[in-house]
Image (cartoon, rainbow, N blue to C red; front, top):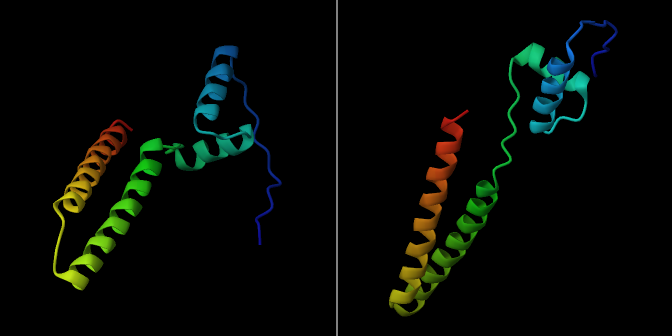
Length: 110
């Protein structure tokens, strides 16, 4: 059951403060001023972790997993492994490592 919010808090801000609050609120992707101020008052920070690199990384992980399964199936069927398959997998893994480093660098800035 959702807790009822029946108490109000009122305070004044200057125009520059108001504009800064709205800029920060929008950068966090929060549309409601009440939600933003409540979140900041209770937790002290808001994070918007919409990193396009995460979506790309998830896609590459899926592709690597598919490729690895195909290579394993081929090896089990014929006891042969193709250099091109391994090179493709290595390239995708290198790209994943690069994206992971970018994400970690961005998170370290927070």
